Length: 271
Image 1: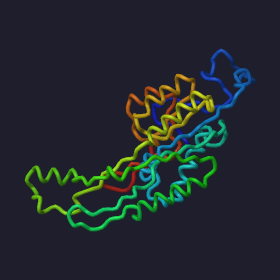
Image 2 (image 1 turned 90 degrees about the vertical axis):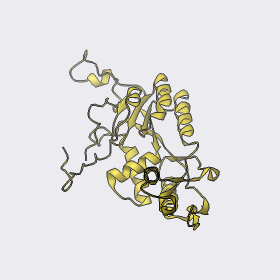
Image 3 (image 1 turned 60 degrees about the horizontal axis):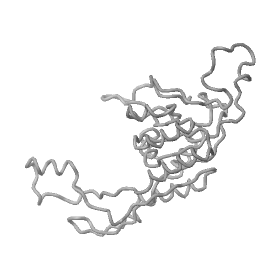
Image 4 (image 1 turned 90 degrees about the horizontal axis):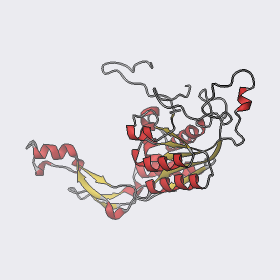
C-alpha cells in the first residue's frame, strides 16, 4: 500500500535535498539544484512501544512477537522514503523504542486467593521475546523504564462497580474476574523527553519522527521545533488531539490505513 498522510494533515519534510517552502520564484530545469541543501536530512525515529502495539493489533491484527518487532522496524525505515515508498530521502540516525519490561509481580487473586506469577504469564513471555527481537534489529536502541511491583494493586472493574452501585449485584456475587491488576510504567515518558532534548540541543539530527498519539509529548515537540528540528508525528491513523496537532511540523502515517468494518456485514471497501 502506498504510504500517505492523514487527510488534512500538514505535509512532512521528506526531501533531503530541497529546501522548504518549495519556492514559486524559480521554475524550469535545474530548479532543484538551486535549492539544494548542503547537509542531508538525518532522522531519528522514536517509538512509543505501548502505543505501537495497541495500534498494530488494530492495523495488522494478531502478531507474533517476532513479527511485531519486524513491523516496528519496517515502519520506522519507511519514514526515510518518499510518499511513494521508493526513493530514500533521509539518513537514519537511530530508532529509539520506549517501553518497560513486563511486571514481575507475584501474589494472589483478591477473592479466590489463587497464586499468580505475572513474570511467567503468556503476555510477559510475549513481551520479552518482542524486546529480544528488537535488540537484534539494525540501528535499534531500547530505552527501558520500569513497573514498580510495590505499586501493583487490584482494582474493581468499572462495570462491576456500576452494577454494585445500581443494586444489580451484591458483594458476595463478585468473582476474581470482576477485578483487574493496576500497574503503570514509570520513567518511559521521561526518557523519551530527555532524548528529544538531547538530540535537539546537540544537533545530532535535523528531523525527529515520533510514532505515538500522546499529547503528553507536546512540551518536547515544542522544544525540538524551537531548536530548528523538523518534528513529524505518526499516529498510525489514530485521531490526535488538536493541541498535539498544533505543535508538530508534519503528520504522516506510513502503515496501511485500517479498513472500517460495516456494522451488519463484511468489512467495507477502502475509500
